[in-house]
Length: 469
Image 1: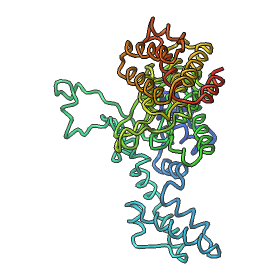
Image 2: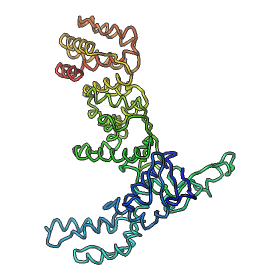
Image 3: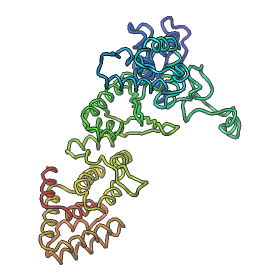
Image 4: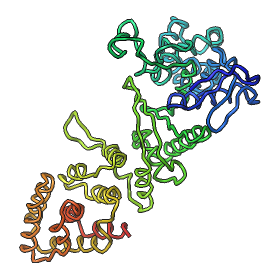
């Protein structure tokens, strides 16, 4: 909520984090103020609000901050920095690459084409290009920032930048085209019943998000300092992840870093928190609400040394449809729903034993009670090993397929019948099966563990036993 202070001699605006939009605006504003007012004389941070002088918010200062924040991601800045370091005495191949990359940026968007027209860098016209950059700097910053898909355009209506407070919110998904849709937004087609909210400070919301294909803002609004520190901590974790991940694994994305941070850091997020997600391909914001119960489950993943990195892959359904297993698992944890559908999916193939084992362990955490202790796990794997050693491979695979099909179709009576048949055929007593006969739904993970153990070598089962200790 924004309040104009009439009688305050030091500051004239008070901004409170009344919802995520105001929280994000505060985070963006504080970054802006830290850049343009290093002496901290024009703003003040309290636990529940910030105070500042609105006169400090100018178009000139805003664009300077944009250039500072985004640097080489702005086409003209990339050109400028590379021209300043260009040296004709450099290696010929290096110079060829630099010239090519500079020329690509000179025609990189509409405003660059307009300013530089048919000008191409040839190694000798450096000063001419730098002069044009300096002459049109504000225009270059403004148009690039406003229209670039990972900058202002991703969050706000591009025509609303620098506009004063208005009736309709400038954020995408919130903005209303009044001439076309005005009447339909109000109850009973009465526009007087419509309540909208917009402030000029919403132009600072893009700076609060941590950018990727999916951008995130952590609305940790317990107090103002938590809002800013949550972003700083998260940015550091993302940087560390990028440095540690191999190139082929960088596709994991920003949500991977978020959940990894919760799993591995006890002090990162400790209570219910709202996370705002902005996918570049969607024209609206999404809310990811992480409850304390889900946070506790994520932290226990690390405590039990569950290999959640093994879940980072996409499962192919057909040529046009893939399921992101990691994303699916995290959705189940956030919604407190079991992973049975994911386990069923992976049990169909004979190559996912290790992953299924990790999923069963996470299922145990989601249930909130330990269905299988180490003793039961050892019994299950011992029974599976004995069966494998006593019956032919083709019979073993047949029984495993029957068990898999029955449990996928939730024919639990059939699963129990097949277990009895397999026990009789192999002459192995399944002591663990008593729990299934009494309450299959509650003890379903026991069945999953046995089916999974039937398909892999003794070495795998011994290793998983050791890992669970």
